Image (cartoon, rainbow over all chains, first blue to last red; front, side, top):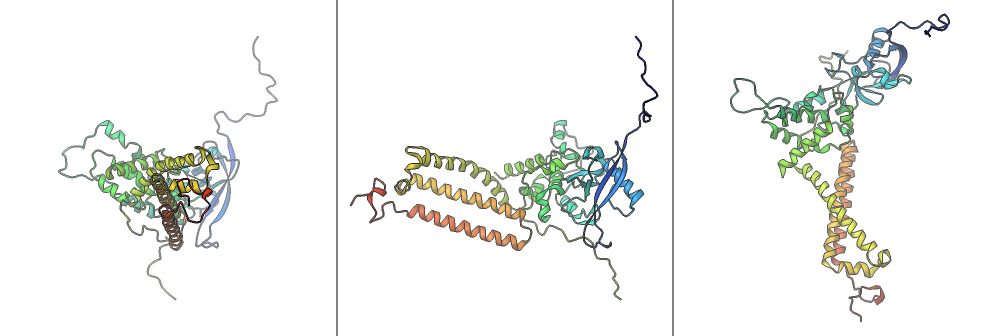
Amino acid sequence: MTAVLENPATESPKPEVGAVPSFEVTLRVRRYNPESEHGEESVWDEFTVTAHGTDRVLDALHKIKWEQDGSLTFRRSCAHGVCGSDAMRINGRNRLACKTLLKDVNPDKPITVEPIKGLPVVKDLVVDMEPFFASYREIMPFLITSGNEPTRERLQSAADRERFDDTTKCILCAACTSSCPVFWNDGQYFGPAAIVNAHRFIFDSRDEGGTQRLEILNDKEGVWRCRTTFNCTEACPRGIEVTKAIQEVKRAMITRAF
Amino acid sequence: MTTQSTIPSPRSPYVRRKTTRGNFELYSWVFMRGSGVVLLVLIFGHLWTNLMVGDGVHAIDFGFVGGKWASPFWQIWDLLMLWLAMIHGTNGVRTIVNDYAQRDTTRMVLKGLLYLAFTVVVVLGTLVIFTFEPCPPDAPANLLPSFCPTI
């Protein structure tokens, strides 16, 4: 028996083959603009845009900025999860807007978008990253060596490289530091990102500044303020095991002291 | 009309106030782990001898406590328990105050109260353990430990 198409005429017109389904999505964006009529107060603004299944939160923000409200301000550079400019609090969790698909954050309900917490807001979703970078600079994120410069590369075994591989992935987006409850309090804590980048050099066999860096982080506001809440590990868009790195730095300090 | 030569920064000053390097937090961190383990032994040992051995909870009275504190072993046991628990607990609350108090004055007041409570409890407790009189005069003999001289 041959298969026949039943009632071809009654079927509704099918969408184009390969077309991505579109849907309406509402974004609740926390706006802050001291020059507006709201003054120093932040307000929630709702925008509804048509988005596709392949769209990210960043695409929706672009649509709002380009088609609805040009005054919406946010940072983004590469838009592909490498530059670390667009970390924001999406549905209460720190994520990169360019790596978060709308369909993954429940587009049936309004999606809340806020600036990352714990850093002073400049406008809308743009925060002042200076305190974050100040901590980063403090741990001296560069190779420290002594003796003569070698005439060729500083070679390292694959195993030695593997030791700090995880922490080389950091893109300095501040998602971890601004997810840390200890950092939210008074901003004095160095923060996970600074410790991760210190870890990257402390455990590098070519680097000789490990002792100095441990000394810097052996501060009242250093690694000992970590409460291992794992917020940073959860927030990291690069999947770095941040809390583990902090614990490794702690262990290095303890073995150094005893 | 006032003219401004520079536009003030919209940023709130938000920098680390000073470096506070030193091994204090390191030792405090290690102490919390070490004392935690020791306290587990001390507290469960204490509970076991007081509540489970012999007549158990029904045996506890003035005579029982007096008898225990007549022996240097239990004196040292209880002293260790008191000190370790108080330092462990105070240090824990100190970290919580550091984490949650947002203003410096709040932090100072809370920590002041905490250290005051710590001193009072530790001094009083130590005094009681070492100056405890197991055989007070003019007390009915049936309430006293068995080793008290009968008058």
